[in-house]
Image (cartoon, rainbow, N blue to C red):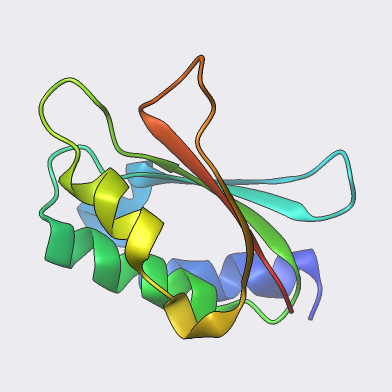
Length: 107
């Protein structure tokens, strides 16, 4: 799978009025970087979409999940605990931005 195929598949996961939540770009280390903004979503909505993003990607990706921090940490806590099909190589929440979690996902 190449980057353009990944973009086509992502259009099936995040579409319509929620398309603004998703941004994809070629990463500096070779892996595509996908940013997904969960503001205004429930934990169940965020989990379903993130799980779908992980499942459709067949190449290594870095998934940046923007979840916020000031109005609760439910999505951040879910990201820390969820397995997402065992393909997560690394989870990282930068200290300078506690409202974001970075997931490195294996192929």
